[in-house]
Amino acid sequence: MTPDKKLAVLIDADNVSYSHVQEMMEEISKNGTPTIKRIYADWTKPTVSGWKKVLLDNAIIPIQQFSYTSGKNATDSALIIDAMDILYAEKVDGFCIVSSDSDFTRLAMRLREAGMTVIGFGEKKTPQAFISACDKFIYLEILKVTDTKAEPAAAQVKALNIDKKTIKLITESVNDLADEAGWAFLGSLGNFILKKKPDFDPRSYGFSKLLQLIKAMNKFEINEIETGKNNIRHVYLKQK
Image (cartoon, rainbow, N blue to C red; front, side):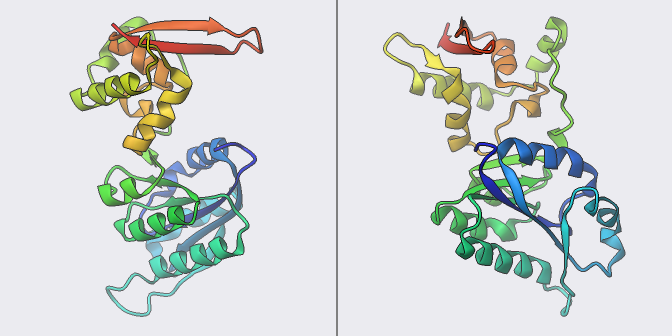
C-alpha cells in the first residue's frame, strides 16, 4: 500500500503486548495513513493497564467493553462489529488488525472479500489460520530490527538461520517471475512472495531488507542498474 491509503487500525488489547506499540505505529505508517485508531478491552481489568500509558502518545481511542459473561470474549465481538461498520461507511482503503487471536480469521477474510487490504500484526504465537487470512502479516517481535547494513561476517552468521523452506520459496518465486533470460525484478518479488506466505519478512532472519537476505543466500546473480533518478536502482536476480 502507499502512504495516501487510509487505514483503520483496530487493536485487541487482550492478545498483544503494548511494548511494541511505537514500532508498530511506524510500520503501519509505511503502508498508509492510520485515520482510525481504536483499541478494545475491558479497561477495568489490571491485565491491560500497560496499554493505558501509551494510548495518549499514539492518539489511539480506547473502547470499553465489559466482560458480561465469563468465558465469552466480548472484546472480539465489539472489534468485529466496529470493523463492519467502518467497512460499510466506505471511509478507508484497508484495515490493520492487531491481535494474536484466531477469532479474527473470518473477519479478515470478509474484509478482503469486500476489496479491502488487510494487514495483520501479532506475536509469534498467532495461529496460522489468521496469518493466512491476511494479505500481509507482521510479527511484532521483529519490528526492532534496525535498517543497517550487515557486515559480511555477520551476514554469514545470519544466513545460517535461513531454513530450506524459505530458500525454496524465494527460489521458486524468482523462477516464476523470471523472463526468458532468467532475470526477475526485485521490486515485484516481495509482493509476489507475500501472496504465497503472508508472514514472510526478511527481518525474521535478521535482515532489514529483502536484498540483504538474498545476497546472504549466495544463490543468485544480482544486477543493479542505476536509473539516474534520486539514486534509485532497479535490481534484477537470476538463479546461479
